[in-house]
Amino acid sequence: MTAEKKKVLKRLSSALYPLGAAAFIVVLWAITAAAVGEELLVPSVGATFRGLWQMLTEGATYAAIGGTIWRALAGWALALVAAAVFAALAILFKPVKKLFAPLMSVMRSVPTMSVIMLALLWVTSGQMPLIVTFMTLFPVQYSAMVAASEAVDPRLVEMAKIYRVPTAKRVLKMYLPCMAPQIVEGVRSTLSLTLKVTIAAEVLAQTRDSIGVGMMQAQSFLQTDRILGWTVIAIVLGALAELFVTFAAWAARRLYAVGERA
Amino acid sequence: MLSVKGLELSYGDKKIFDRFDLEVGDGEVVCILGRSGCGKTSLLNCIAGALAHGGEVNGTERGVAYLFQETRLIPALTAAENVRFAVGHLYADRAALNAEIDRVFSSLGIDGLQNRLPGKMSGGQAARVALARALCHPSDVLLTDEPFGALDVALKLSLTEYLISALKARPRTVLMVSHGIDECFDLADRILVLGGSPCRILYETNIDEPRGERADIAHRAHKTEEIKRALIAE
Image (cartoon, rainbow over all chains, first blue to last red; front, top):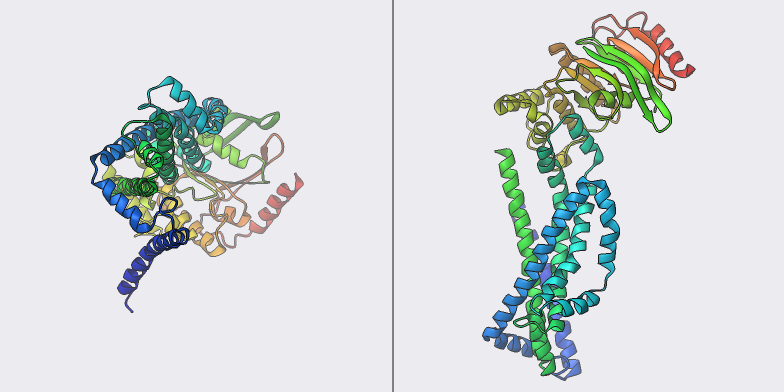
């Protein structure tokens, strides 16, 4: 067999694993639905996808998806920017880092529910999921960035100092490339958390045009197939977001590499 | 000339250097021997400007090339990028820098490795890239801290050979911390044994024969004995 053929086969087989996993879930689901035999408790795979299809023909579904994406993305991006600013301060100034450490652990351990309850009193139901998403993600992203900076070898820092490398060059060519893989990983791992938190907050805030309210309404009308339909939509959105970040990181690496070697 | 005058350095209550003086002439190679922790690396770091200290250091206005114990290459940058990172800001002309990188790489036998990442190199290749980085520095002052310590004997010998020929082609003012007496005899114009607390020069000897013709000089054995005695006596 040629090396080329082997490569193609390897690619194909690596694509088989996620497909296999999906097939496993569907089979398990079908067996469970058949065993329970009650569409209200566990709707069959067919019924769920019929429900999902029905949902996709309704304009309200897209309004809800759009609203949720907007809130999740805004909360996530705000947290990312704020975390980057605070992390930069903490990395450059040791006392700031020490000051932030207890604040961040407090923020991390505050239950999401108490943030939701308080935010319900303070802001409108449209803003609340955004605030809650921000509050939940900010400390996580901050910690990921500070941890990434600690992964930069102090011996490299000393080398740059001895060779009197200008600060801007140190940041661009040493700190950022050394931190980038960990930052991307940290950012990617918060994406699925973002959707979970945003949707939970939407349920409690009764936010208009949101996946959360869509789920809640489906639940109160005992439309279990639609709850699962919304779940499938949320999973697909999460997967798309992760793909997007992976692609953005790849594109950034390519651009960076081309700029450097030119 | 590289000169250190009245160097003062303390770690907590412990005085490492107390009015320590040292002069290294232009183009002179000085090797330093001494027990671990006696202050050899600290001396290099003070000269390099990596450690805050009292006293004066002169002759480093153009910066120093530094060869570390480890390679200290940035894993995200290729070999050539690593060199450009460390010395690029010292060259006005980028083409001249790239030409110098290519010249040094080819003389070190690592031509073609310019675009390789450190993670994809062997230990010997990475050591050569680190040496190339130091040799591309325009300064005539080279500080080295047991640079080939972790390599196998054959590689260590070939890199030492290369350093000798590089010094012949372009004389540099070298201060080299070493653990090997033989290595010192091969490279040095002067050998110092440091020790004591605070650190001072315990023994000093000049090697007058030209580098490369020292394999069987008559007094080598005698001097080796003296160096050993100075090292052990402390």
